[in-house]
Length: 280
Image 1 (cartoon, helix red, strand yellow):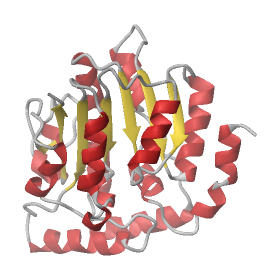
Image 2 (tube, one colour):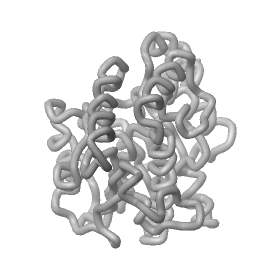
Image 3 (cartoon, rainbow, N blue to C red):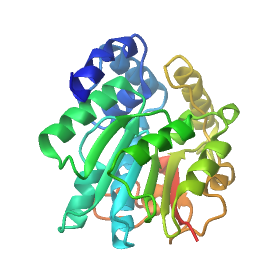
Image 4 (cartoon, one colour):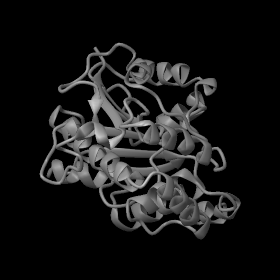
């Protein structure tokens, strides 16, 4: 049985409740989602009308961050909680930014639907020597990193672009995100880049939006991925004090915006914060 076939066999166990990965896919215009996900997404949209725009701004940031990492010399990426493949996958962005097509990408996720579709996409369109998708849980960092070491895709002696894009708001503080990230930071070679982003509840526009963000977390508590929003100060600790690349920590539309960047004129309205830090 091939890896994609095995992953598809396991999909059935994951579709009885909304999944954050599939809801996100729906919000950014993807097609790998189910009725349970769409019903939940529309419930959220009724309470927070711009949630789809926030998700798209987050996805756009991932693309710009990957390009910036490639410009900074990164030639391999590990994408944790990579989610469902859609427009602007890391390996596609990296190959577009690097015509030599020498960038390696390893995707890791514990969501069966995401894993299955990632493996199918890579089997059909990618370079198996440079691109792989594996099952792993980022909350079990020791086991996950063993998968990285065994993959033959990543050379851990060389700098890595480690990506946790739009996943930290699904890791609550009692799940020890600090310890998890400290472990991953320790595994990276000097010169590696850490790409992080998540939704924030900092500086809501008014009391209505403040309550809507509270309600958002209440809604997600009914899914397979309960969540937590963080302020800029609460989020900054995840970089471990590493120096941040310009423009530093902030709302993601302010990070090297281009003509397509949503919320470029009002970055704080995106509700998404992020940054890239370099390991000394």
